[in-house]
Image (cartoon, rainbow over all chains, first blue to last red; front, side):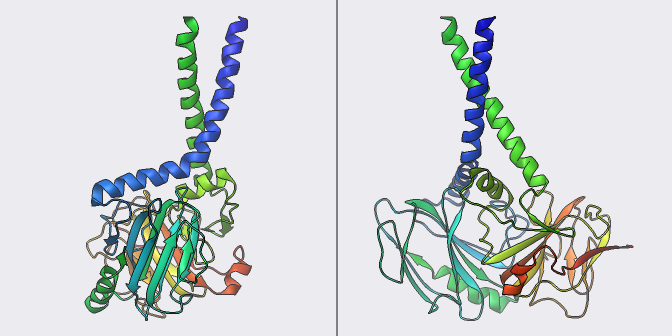
Length: 171
Length: 186
């Protein structure tokens, strides 16, 4: 009888630990599921950029996509080298660069009005930085999203922004 | 020998029990909009303490890869002005102005939080494509102007996004005048 209580007590303690660990790692699980889904569905690896078209009802990679945006994404890994982001961004619409930790927290966002130029020339590094164009990542691995707003859905606007989107270069 | 069997069973059971309760609790918090600010039938993305792992788990479930509240506000509603769930069985008018900001849009999502299939491929009404002084019509049948199709969704949500909101918007999120979603006869 004593032994049963002992086992129940152990089960309770371990369940509490399991509960806390699950809560702690739910964001990382969500992130990893998304990471694997993108790698598998889009055939891209870390430090490779993927340009997505304007979302529609077939876009099922991430919940609540904004159908006014062109998204470019990258799973970055700074273990071996820094990442350079070069682009000629639009000058007449909202765009932004944002970074996320593997626990899905948005640790950096800067939009077109906050950048001094539309010619994007950024370096993402895990090391210390001292320059305005260098962004220090708090994590070696994470996720970046560049959003370009396409408010008018006429063909000319869409084509213009698609061209600019495809010119975003990562090296 | 007995312990060699019992210990792994206890470990496995504890993982299942702890994990199940954790997911159940987070899902319940999401459904009850536990950390959201409420304004009428709208809820807005929450004031979060991101050092708290429970709140981090919560946000990863409701809006993974959303922007922080300084960049964008996300107002969500799944109910009409009478508190009834939004459904494509009915038509709705969105009456009133969105909070001031650089860009705003209304987007309709199904119960699964993905965009709703419709023949017209219209998913959003925004600051640019809105015909001013006319209400936004949410309907499963085609409308000539400001039409936001609801497809065949038995339940859906409307998200109002405001990018770079005016400073004043943040000051009274709970009492801010927000548009109403009014049910109308088909």
